[in-house]
Length: 324
Image (cartoon, rainbow, N blue to C red):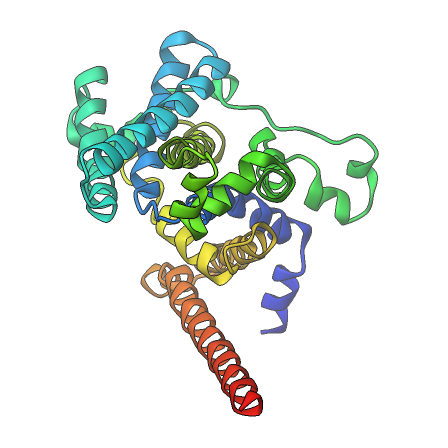
């Protein structure tokens, strides 16, 4: 046990927590903004899968990670706008739209991969990750001076460019939501769309902007999965991170900082599961750890939230009684 704790207290382990948390954090920010706009986008998993495939294939055929990266972002935005069209214009239940996109994200991406690359299903599952080389992946960044700091330098320096962007977007998204007129409109539409409309805010436009933002963040997450976390695309490589992000958004109270901390908790759980597998624990026991932590986290969040609501109701009842 002591030896295992020594393994955890290494810069490599903390480095892996930050690395694993990045795609979850992108999707968490996507979930936060649409929640502020008054609806949920449960199709994050499918959006990330399509973005990951687009980024990998365009990077390979264009011979440049930059074009693959842009393709991943464009795919996320366009597909999210498509979801918005079905939900807002055609009045389809947005939950059902999200479920459909998630289902397409698994089978549809495999079909597209086979059509475009002409690989069989078995090869598509095993070999597509080899389509692009390290040179076609989004580069890692070494931070001068910080990389020289003992222990901390190995934790904070050397991450992929998108990892740093994920944590930067926490700050930028918070500023957008609470320091700009756009953020005010998003929150107004989420809290009371009729009141927002009465003062000239286009509710439909704001909802589309929120959906586009969620697609953009999903595009970042998908690009990270296929062009940073792995060298190329493979079937179901997102592995539930879109759903975990929904849990992180809920646990974080729908706020950027809380969502970031929740994403780090889930990143820690996944890193711990990988470490357990590395030291010889049965993979069937190690792989469910992140999902077990997700369930436990949501239970804790629900209990705390219910207690808070009960206290508010009790306080309101006391004030009403005192007023009489």
